[in-house]
Picture 1: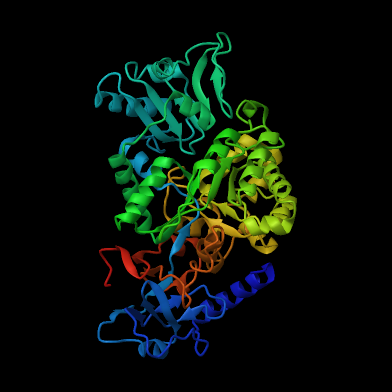
Picture 2: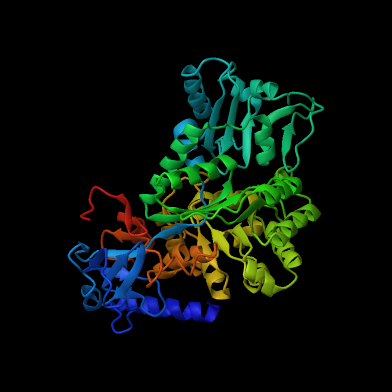
Length: 568
């Protein structure tokens, strides 16, 4: 769909919602002889389809939409065995597609790690108290892993000796909420063989060091440094437990498809086992993460391109930065601002993925990192048309740099954003980037600009890196851009509810080549949908979006989740 037709669709859909109109006449018709297995009537069905944005009723057969439109057209498909749901004025939308989250890691964090989220943990004292509590519950020598810390009142990360004071007899690794930074205590570094001045920094990472001795001080920059210390592993039973738990949490908030953009072999295998056991509550698009060119080549040579009914191998994920790779970096953060790959090797990885005819998916936060990524895509593809065909993606892209936005639109690069970044990090970014970057912060997560310029836009919660797995939080932040009570970023980058919902359905479907089957409620498409408490036409502001409550989530016409309030 072109940028012009996208804008036309959004305008028509918004007008239909505002007026409460129901599409009549333009029915996606079914043959009269067909009988539905499931029919939903007496409600408001927001289809996200261009021709018929609203409908009164919907019929489902064999996991697909048989018909959607006026009640009279659907009524004729009801037979003696048809299950009927009276919506009683409630609303239905397409299933929400989370284009960036990690189900197994979500479950592992919540079920296996020490949770270090603020405001419970916001100082070295509160951190030490949580770690000491965990130490009392585990035998000496056993690893303690915590995740979720952000800023500390002390204005810096703790060093290894400050963790030793609370936990001297256990190896300790704590991981930042975003997953890119960590801190290890002395015993952890010693256990990993890293407590020496001559240890080399790993490719793509860095050990911060004591300036006097050169010995690592415990602060770990980027995944390679963190995993050089310790990489917690789950056995097969634990992997299934954590994955199933994470997926059920997502289904409970209306998610019917997940793009796992940091998928390990263990989590990929868990998805397949759950699929084969009939226990998947949503569809999965898998993007294995590669850490360097050699690893990428190994994955491309050995990975089977699995395509099951619900699970599909989709592309390859890598990162260009962890701390934002910026053109201008505050002096106090230069030791953190390192690229994950030298530019030449980064471009070689992208070229290898493109030549394998797979979709590349790059984590890029800083303005320089985004430009490196767009340049690598253009170089690998050789033409904008070939880049658009392959739909190479960017994850995050939070800063508005207009020439980069327009280049992404020209190349047809889908961008998966996290609107929840606004309340989570706006204040921190102001402090880190300084007064010269104020406009970057005010316009961060530039959804209106992306939409206006024709950048394909998707939303992902990025749980467990972000605190909330709820799409409603993404919708709220996209609509109101509120940092804190009384504090709002540039409202010119806000988008209305219908646009935000489109990003989270059709936009996210497009990002994984699923728009012909998912993302809207149209005849022949998968019957993935959510029944909501209330009327979606009443959603005006972010508070309304945050208050949305899924009553039931359906995958291929079958309930994947039902709330206690559900009448279905």
